[in-house]
Image (cartoon, rainbow, N blue to C red; front, side, top):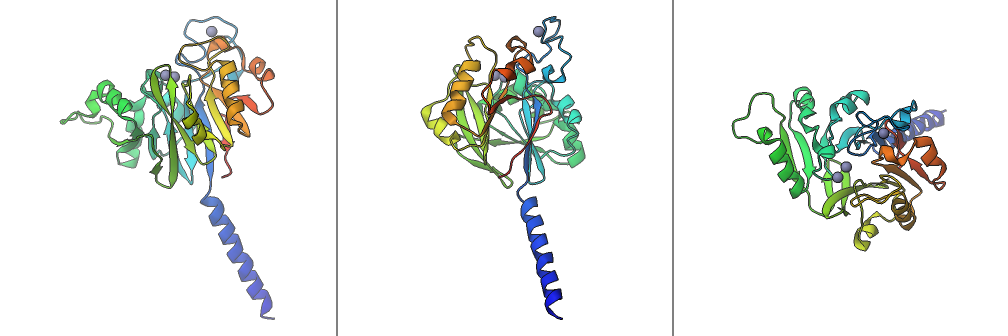
Length: 281
Ligand SMILES: [Zn+2]
Ligand SMILES: [Zn+2]
Ligand SMILES: [Zn+2]
């Protein structure tokens, strides 16, 4: 007679444990933007891609939302940051991680104010020295001694090429080269996000190996001085050999989403705005 309550209690404990361990391991990635610096469609362009009716051919500037154990993080705040936060209905934001200082990756930083007001705290920013210099230059009013009321409130956390921790999320930076400009790529568990790369050294590739999901920039088919083209991106993916790879930072010159996908290997896809990946880590 007493065995059943014990069994029930054990099942209940097990259910709680499974629920807790699932909750403590949630990780998803949402592409907020997958376009190159001009976005797609390009202003005043009448090409087939810019005129496409397929929503997947509409690309805001590159950014991803990481939902990690119930907390939100964003990589890069391009000019579309405000629109991206609204579109993805992001209600809270813990921190920003920056890849590099180009305008299409930082221009929207001013709009963290909405989170400052709502969360009543500074926005944590993780960036390299070079990005910090650019932020201090381009958003000088944020860093003045006597700030105008209502300007963004940020707390800068300098990153070097060493793993760092943001709350319970371990981030491994990977330095890739964007022509002559170092860019930070980020690996979080089995997910690696690389944008604006043209070359990646052997030693940095070692840090990426074993990743399950690899995001990498592929601008177009033709060569470009500072970005992987399709051929280079595919060679890089083959070298890393992830389970799945997604192309991002797409130019309107690349072609339509559907047409590009037809040409790709089985485990390679073109990312699109709104695509969400569940990372089981
Ligand atoms: Zn870019
Ligand atoms: Zn176009
Ligand atoms: Zn760039």
